[in-house]
Image 1 (cartoon, rainbow, N blue to C red):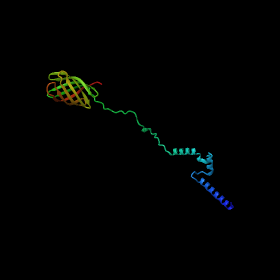
Image 2: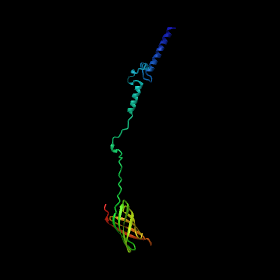
Image 3: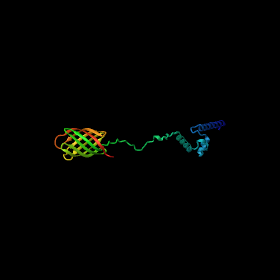
Image 4: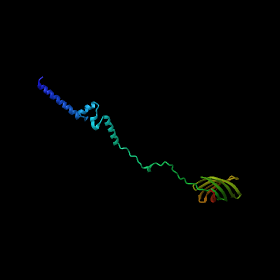
Length: 201
């Protein structure tokens, strides 16, 4: 083979080798030819701060964790939820227990004396009523709602019934009533009462 051809081939190979070395050093890996040789032998010491792929991944994960800002936990305990049971104020029922005297007026005038007892809003008691025909024993039962007293009074002997609907004002009460006699037609009238002596608590 002629010497000119050999020289041309030599320089062509030399140029190709130089291009390959440049491509390795400036490629996407960013590694030099020496580093690639070390990697092929399992040696990552020449990578500097980059380290082995495992170390690089660990470093990348740590940076990702540092970049993530965790939500702040409020230390304000003044806004903590109060789980203690709430007390609801219930208005107390006024007391009407004691000895009452009622004046009943329709076509006749009657005086009724009652001793009323009370359990919350329930009323009950006994007493007497004075009529033209004399005095008769009576029993009472009803309710108290606010200042409204509603109760029935029944005579023991004649079984007549007085239905009272009164409004309490302090130690007095006033309103209307209806008398349902055991024989005859109902009678409507007015009633006024006074608490003579409140029951001792």
